Length: 64
Image 1 (spheres, rainbow, N blue to C red):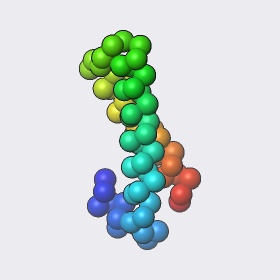
Image 2 (cartoon, helix red, strand yellow):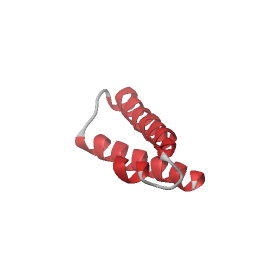
Image 3 (tube, one colour):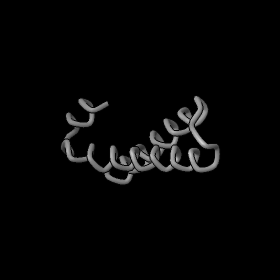
């Protein structure tokens, strides 16, 4: 995770946009669920994890 990203030859700064993309994606999923369902469930949390991981990996692949 964080230590692996910090140890890359490209530098530690790649962690910032990857984490930001993941947080924004997670927030959007949870916000949408709260508006549509009135709250969150375990399935919503699982979807938020998957979306945040996917966005983080997409951003990481664009930065390499």
